[in-house]
Length: 350
Image (tube, rainbow, N blue to C red; front, side, top):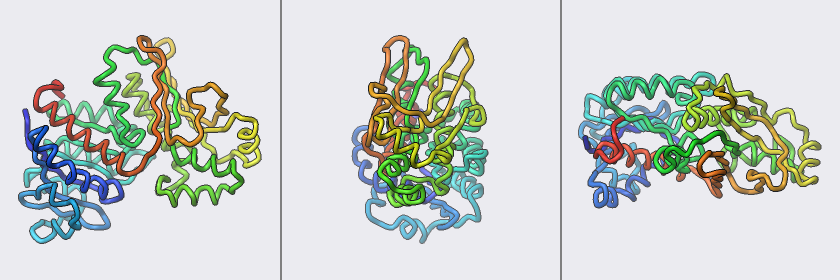
């Protein structure tokens, strides 16, 4: 059943700041092509506060206006994220876009936010790897029980339509495994160290570009890649893994001499994620590997790459040449449109 998107945005970092103008820019298209008129019903974060608007504001009004100033005059202020979700539900919000900070240890508190939204009859879109990696199966079950949708394209490869590709355009292809470079920060750090910069200088470079996690060691110790590997193994291979079951080795202990020697030999080291099903048993790893010429992952400057091994189509390799918050924001927008198409009946039931 179709319903107008009435959106709560939880988290007001870079992705949310990119998503709001993107929604505004695409609003006319959505009205014309999809017959929907998105409303922003609330915006919340620990730093900026939690505001719920009683009727919602048309998304196109957020093209240049400061969102908090636009919402504040008529909005109700809430004390925390959970009361924000509850108040938003009472005010008629029907979709939570969850964009809060990653906690790689257990996915909290975002996991509780998503659960509360589903229990409050909201579809959920998230870019947060933690809840999906740690409890994706349970959350999907909860969503189905309530007749809702949970989508998370932006959790892996910044909105590149990898999950949607597998779900909608590769039916019965038989994905047997994958290998990929899923963490941009580790690649940037390794490339910088190949060129003679110290680990500390390389980390600062990644932070200046804006790609490192708030704690860069989530990237360099392989936690970010392990989260993404778990999500992909479960989504593509139906593996039912948790992050703790991914064999993880980061790049912290690699010396600059080792990194430079590998690059000079033409076999650069990169942090490789892989997963496969062997005799019905899933296996997943994240570890530094020397890439040989001819390897599909043997690239220098591309931000991300993944190779799918399939039964019906052989090897399919997707390369992402540039990433940023706009790509992550687009992944959330695409999830919103897929939910709307599903509610129109063209994509089936949750």
